[in-house]
Image (cartoon, rainbow, N blue to C red; front, side, top):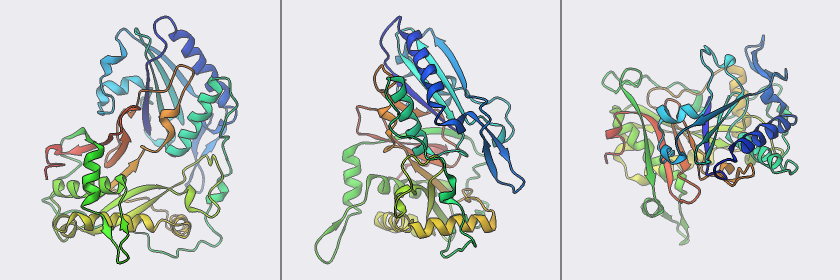
Length: 389
């Protein structure tokens, strides 16, 4: 389940009820096109989950706060104790099938501020599909036609017949369980922490990991690549992995543009693939920072159409899931999703943030609409060690 909050300044006192009704009415209208959200998950006889388009609807909750919205502070600092009050999550659900596909909570504050809290079932769609849905929803709220209609044909990512696994897929290969001395993520205390990366810091990280080729040109890593490498190193150190143990960094990659031609615009589903950077803990923590960056870059380069097709077929034949326990770390990027373009008629959000981050996932997002800072958030063991060096 992905929980996310959009914080708006609103239009001031007395206008909250109108705004809430606009959000509710436009949601009902946009669900005509995005009707899978109004259905329910079922487990098929083949062991695969599917959405039945029953039209049962989306849970919509209205809430009020006697505080001003500024009391939330900087919501990019993930604080589940406060932020999870702004979303409606399923109470008592025992399995992912019992979770709703989408819930919406609108909370109004006495100053006129508004938050829209969304809980999305990741089984149905990914972040890009959610962003497309929000674009259409806000279009409808402002009296416009939806700008990105959903493409609902899932067959474009079906396994081939017969399935053909043409490449290795280490993202699905279980790694050796960590040694006994490693920090046990299941028994040690966990806390949320958010770390800010200002532009000048990212520039310095890029400088030390830029390569000059033989023809004099430079290969400069992206901000996400250097952050990913740094997080991977820091987490491996914090866990105390033995030097000989294998460590993996799994990165969620949007597969839509990897195809030729790209997947149809508005593809409504999970279009992500996992890249897998892999090496020994000793190599990762002892070699120069450039080594980690290059390992991440090479893994990302491997995510091609052929790689994704092969991965789909690998899952079909072996019925496996990504192994993210122990010495594996997952990282995902929200900073380029169009969340900050969401406008229901009373301006864009001044902040968008998750209310929580799932276990063993690190999330990279923008701090706010007005800031160039990137925020790295995670559910961490021994956070005081995470960025110690």
